[in-house]
Length: 157
Image 1 (cartoon, rainbow, N blue to C red):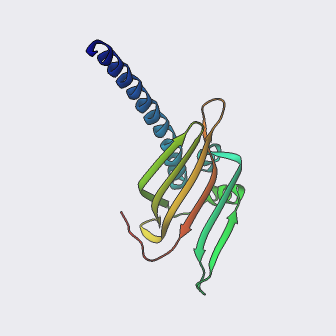
Image 2: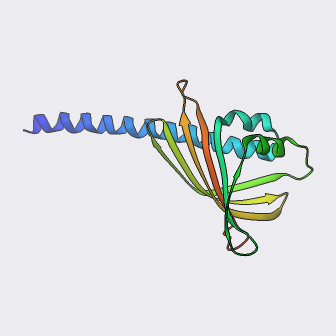
Image 3: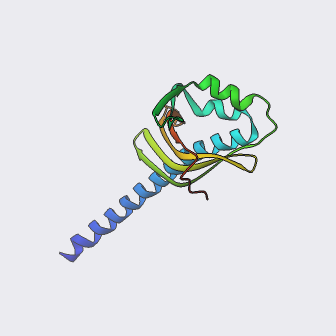
């Protein structure tokens, strides 16, 4: 009986280790897309940011207006790229933490807390929620981005 169980356990362990390694590699690739997005924003370089998005991306923001009403606003990739690429003297710095990456096959989701700064001045905070898909060439692209925005309460890293 021990002769049967030991090879089975060894094989199961090796297969499980391979699964974890593959998942970690995919998680790293997804996280690199998110990190490149924020680096492109810091550099004010829309050419870094543009290829990270699927052409049919949906971009949305949820916030409360001055009257306390919940607003859901849809943006566009072109407007986002224009804002990033238009020269501005300040550095746009979005700091993220508590980042969770979940992947199944060719679908990934990233959920992360963030705080947005203009130079060193705090602007707002919230959560970014990304959905990404992997294409036939293995390239991950953002297909959906929604975020919350508020001034308070904000945890800052």
